[in-house]
Length: 237
Image (tube, rainbow, N blue to C red; front, side, top):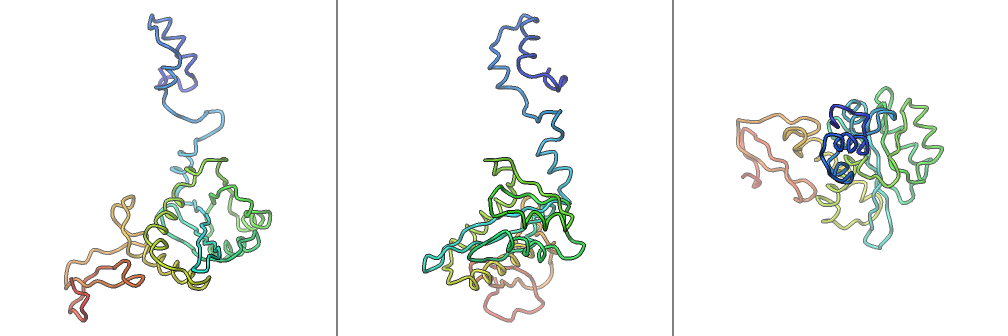
């Protein structure tokens, strides 16, 4: 009934079931109702992501402590179609003006996405929103207390923590920036993703000929494996 009548809620379906001699509680009907958005409100968030993913980027901040317990903030900008880290940097004090400048650097000329997903942090102030409008980017803040709506960039931030920042000691802002850029280069060019059918965001060719060589990334925290015609160092596997 729910599939055939998308405008019906649990009370309406419960009434129909009662008329058919099926005596169950309305709460039971509601429990098994398929989850969907209100048609009157347009497409659901999931449908929006599926329909517009080629033109969507997401942005978020993460905090990083230094060896002296200073608090730094890393900014991550992610293109959703290929899960590519488009831009990554760090600062000690992110303001709306600073964030606006990072958007200009992340999307020069005609590379701006149609939509930008973000949370409701007060740091995304009027100067930031004004820059989005000037760049032709439509601002898409998530609903309050709904981090799952920005799940792609949240997942990337989790990877950055688990695969990088949890294993290094950050000295200062410049050091953090260098670490993040090294990880982003590895993430985009080498790291395989399940959602991309085990490919890397920038695409990674299959190598069949030559000896296997391991290239150290982030001081050996990760490795990039490839093939070469002749082995030249002790990293051969």
